[in-house]
Amino acid sequence: MKSYLSHLECTACHTAYSADHPHGLCPACGKVLYPRYDLDAAKRGADRHALARRQRGMWRFFEMMPVRDETKIVTMGEGVTPMLRASRLEAALGVRTLHIKDEGLNPTGSFKARGLSAAVSKAHELGLKRLSIPSAGNAAGALAAYCARVGMEAHVFMPSDAPEANKKETRMAAAYLTLVDGLISDAGVLARKAAEERNLFDVSTLKEPYRVEGKKTMGYEIAMDLGWKVPRAIVYPTGGGTGIVGIWKAFEEMEALGWIGPERPKMLIVQAEGCAPLVWAFHEGATHAPMWKDARTIAAGIRVPSAVGDYLILDAVRASGGSAVTVTDDEILEAMRQMASLEGILPAPEGAATLAGYRKFLAQGALTPDDATVLINTGSGYKYMELL
Ligand SMILES: Cc1ncc(COP(=O)(O)O)c(C=O)c1O
Ligand SMILES: [Zn+2]
Image 1 (spheres, rainbow, N blue to C red):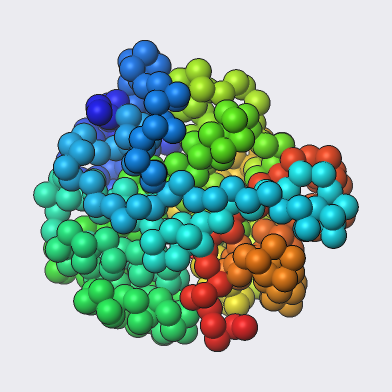
Image 2: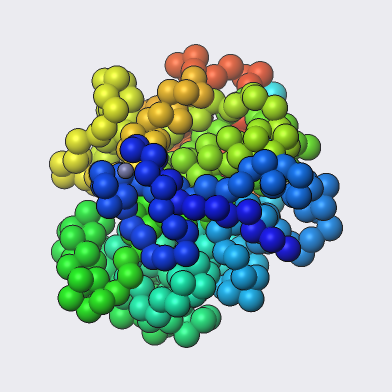
């Protein structure tokens, strides 16, 4: 198989960079770089009908993935997660079509596996050996695991009150763990400093250009799962937002490949009432979200006070005719119970936030009961025993 990766392009100033050397943010303007592909050649060479016959997992989309040499892939079978029809929730909520994409089944129990499999694979191809990451929890566990698998060093910076499972999985995988009194943003400052001092390559989300390529495979799978149609709406629990911008990128690429038409789902973002910079910015009509003060929520993965890709997230929500809501911690806990008791899926609190948010979007009229909707359960509730 051949990857059609061509170069990196800045999402703001559009400067092009080589995809065969390590890069972080755009050296010219400090914004996010995206991998770009030769879409004309891919349109001729990549066949969506061949995908189902390939081995399971997100690397079946190899032509549209950023690694050139297949032998450099570091994988544990991430991706190709179940798209489950939620018929008992449909009945309870009085809606017509609701699916849950269950990312809790990924290696390390969350969708972070997709992004870190992509980033670690590309780092391996580029010859990097020592990686650092600031993380709310799940990304750290995933980085530690993929680094262990390929024999790289992982240096992790995590809030000291992150979920126990994340600290334990990180230590078990022999990563270097630094607990930080503060939030992921504080961990980010330390990770950057350590990266400079110890010559580590920092794989902070969206500051590193390849994690988004792993996350975008959720978008390819959603279309494939639905017979190459897009749903009316996708509800996503948003922290750094790599997943939502990745899914949005996937739709753009799939249209260029001729795999889907010009339709797009409404991209609906959910944040916690105690940490909602993007919801605030969306309703204010702002293109950037100022740092949220005193961020708090039980959903650790969306306790992210500022996002480097805020402008990309807000663009996707607005261009899709989407919207944004907040949910309380009590609503999240109730939604965890509802998803588990009606559908048998024990979600991460972040995933449960999508169900709580979906109910609000319906109540506010942002969605109707006829709008076929996909909730992304981004992780497994089994990593959050202390909350149950
Ligand atoms: C389970 C879970 N859901 C959602 C998120 C937020 O993801 P994103 O950075 O793509 O917004 C995280 C991030 O840590 C997470 O662990
Ligand atoms: Zn730039």
